[in-house]
Image 1: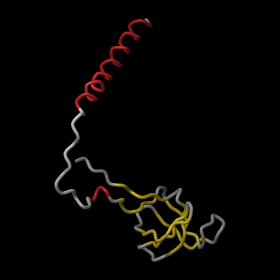
Image 2: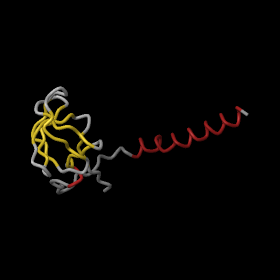
Image 3: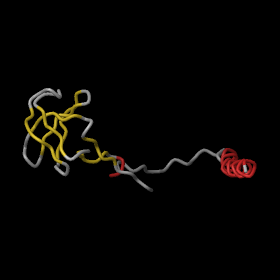
Image 4: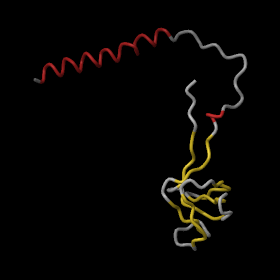
Length: 115
């Protein structure tokens, strides 16, 4: 039972390595530089910030023990003014509340270009 598996695994690995061997000899010519490079694409810029959980407590200082001044719910739009360690000073656009949220619960969306 083991020998057919080993033979199949070796054949698959050999087939996967074959394009790598051919690619090294084909890449001898330097690539042509484009005449005009795009200045900025939407997919190169980080997207808006989003809440990773159902709700995040907005704090008065960048500490888990500080006073809660509000709650940031999933789906709320907010901006990040500054960052201190793993804490972000935010402004909730829905309520106008300003304060600190932990970076463990909010993240920045990143767009991806396919072309």
